[in-house]
Image (cartoon, rainbow, N blue to C red; front, side, top):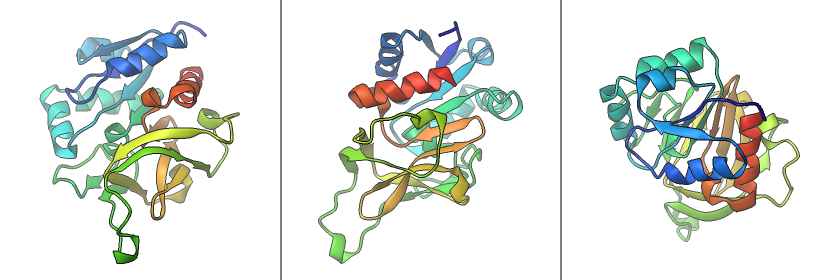
Length: 208
């Protein structure tokens, strides 16, 4: 694995150290930072987080990170991986708040809603679940067919374009659990909490 500058963007939400530790375990050192100069020199970006959509966007704006992130992802086309809330930020809007999302993926973030026949289904969707791979992709290439990942979320991404959907997961219905458009990758689950399967996925991301 060649030396690369993997930046985990620190915008004040989420436990980022567990992602850094997982990357270290696969021999891929990374840096957690909100420093503009460090982020602007990234070879790869990870945008992770747990919390509210609006608060995340406000934090990114207050840290003056929106311009540099747009430049890296949209102009320079470096690989970016969004995890959980980070993936939801890629969308245009969210039912959770009023702020505009990054708009890198056409779609919106919506809350799980179940009818009375599915009243036993819990929100948030929490715990281990499987994925269904919808198209070939380097991120999931060679993944064990019994792979399971750890989820904790009340909202999910609804993509406008089916071509952006990498995997789906069933929780009352099939929702998008991973997406990809060009250099933009997102996963709704937490690879850093998903043991060997999450470790495998992060390793694939470092090899892109």
